[in-house]
Image 1 (cartoon, rainbow, N blue to C red):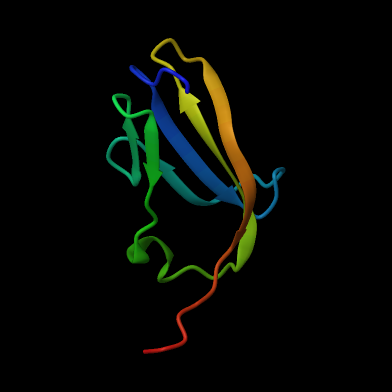
Image 2: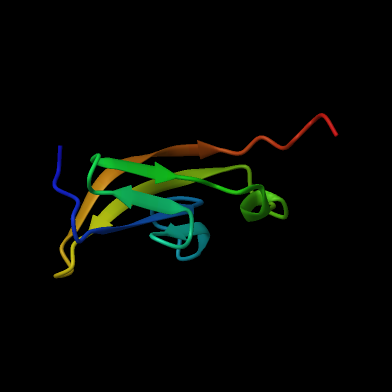
Length: 88
């Protein structure tokens, strides 16, 4: 496990890795990402309000840790598929 004390986290979803515009951005500690240094856990929560008005259905994402001195470490990356609610 990586020592997480003093780190924040950030996540972005974009249409492609080269896209200029972020489709979704989350940060810690106030915007959907919790970094728990004591348990070495990071939790990403995307609220319904973050996605209720989006018009995109897929993209790519990554999650990065940022140290207090500004060092950046990418810890996750992958594809995102957004499926709209069917049952109302």
